[in-house]
Each structure stands twice: as C-alpha cells, then as structure tokens.
Length: 166
Image (cartoon, rainbow, N blue to C red; front, side, top):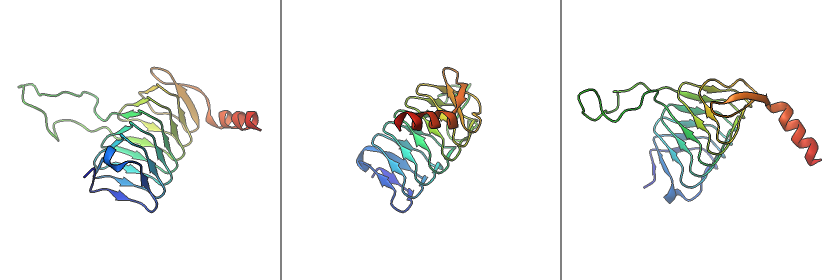
C-alpha cells in the first residue's frame, strides 16, 4: 500500500496513488499530488498546494499553504551524506544530523530545482527551474542559477505577466 500512515486533508487528491510513495506525512486540504512523488515521514504539506510528478520531499521539510512544487524538484536534508561510518558499518537513523527546510506560503519552486537542507524559502518567492538553493531565499525574491542568486522580485514578475496576458 503506497499511502502508509498518511493524514490527508479534506479534498486532497493523490493522482495515481499506486505510483506514489507517501508515508508518515501530513497533507493539507485541497492539495494535489502527481504521480511518482515521494513524501517521507514527518513532512508537512499545507493546504491548496500542487506537488508535480517526480518530486522528492524528504523528512524535515515543511511546506506551507499555496505552494507550487514543479516536476522533479529534490529536497536534501543532510549536509554530509554517507552510506557508512568510520568503521565501515552502515549508518542508520540517528547517525546523521537532519537539516530542516521551510517553504513559506505561496512560494513556487520550478522544475528540477534542488533545495539543500537548512534553508528557508520566503513567502511568495520563486525558485527558477534547475536552480540549486544553498541559502535562504528572501520573501518575494526570484532566484535562479547554480548556486541560486536573487535575480528579481516575484511581485513585479507576476504583475508583468498579468500585463502581457491582458
């Protein structure tokens, strides 16, 4: 069963539940989750979010309401990942330090972005496709590149897009 110990909010939809791996997480009301998504234990996803296909959301991530997660977005939660310790034995839970990630309300993360542990993405911020976020993103900032750098203001970008569409 792909949905183990999952708390789904009212009208949350998991498209193709046989093709997702959700366990021990909480998903808010009206959130939509695409196929081939993994959401690990302890993750909290807010209401009215969209999690696109092939996203990986690891333990330690909190996603507030109305957040967009693009296709293939990857979160990391360990600054020094290793399979084995000094003596050669496999590492287990507790043998590493979890670095939490916070994604604030209304943020958008573009396809194939990577979000490293220990960062906060501010309210209304936009992370460009393919960006690697290595430090905090200010509220309403647009960031892009490797490593991600501020390139603009999301409020201005949204206003310009609305103007073009009018």
